[in-house]
Length: 298
Image (tube, rainbow, N blue to C red):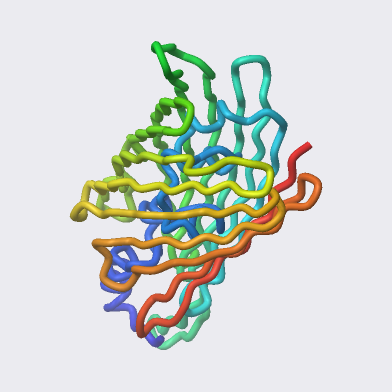
């Protein structure tokens, strides 16, 4: 798109409010993991893999082995989102580290008669997480506690830079078949480009998951949650995951409260500790979004 010097500020404002994470603050709202996407992002009470670093840090407490995961998302137009994370258990404490990167694609500018092509936005988010297993015990359930610290660095049109930090706080309550999860994400300072300070996308998530069946040949989990962003109306997410012989998984999900997103689907394949997941979601007239994740346990 062509822009002149008088419209650069307008361009920055548009980018900051775009629905697909082209502001430094909004990149924190992007979800990680193809598995979670396939389940309609109803993952707050599931969060039983290393991607809990981004979802609900309390979920890291369930890791029995070290895990590494990486994800790639081909978004709308020419933007991309990638992430990598690792979780390491140690006694009753689990440590997690993650990094995610957002590339908003390229745009053409015309400033004072000079044409140039620049990156619309480049974001980097580093995360350090800590989870405590069995933080509290009830008569029939246990409680895990987790915290994630985030550092965000963002640059718009290769000229305007900003940084910020945030904290996630999460808990999970587990019994034989039911798990409850709650997390407050992105508690922190606003992010400032030029003279404008935008608040971070603080979000509250409350969810539950029910283990319908868990045998060697069949594992079925249903999940649901309510999501309340600080700048939007409440959302509802529902998901289902079916594993056959701990080898192949099928997932479906539903999201209510979004303009474009509604149904999602996904598949997974796990072979000797190496897992590949794919998630798919239609975005109406804008096309389809897909995610690809790889996870290794060692």
